[in-house]
Image: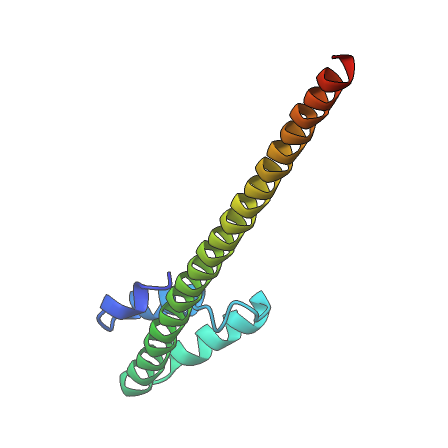
Length: 118
């Protein structure tokens, strides 16, 4: 529904759809939404068009904000994954260095043991 308001032309059916599916009105209890619907539909066409345009604009703004949120969330997640990869690579490098040091010490110890045995 976030994009519905962007491409709709005014009609009573589209007005009803906007009222029923509007993000701005979703928090209203059903009884209040029904009263709002009745009140708006009882108004003249000029008032209905004004309400329609207002709701359509709010839906457009909501869709833009939603898209911006999705894009920022995706970027933040990509940044997190990138940092995680860098940290993992650093840990692996450090572990490999430690393994190499241990192997070198083992070789040195073996050499010392061989010298002692001679």
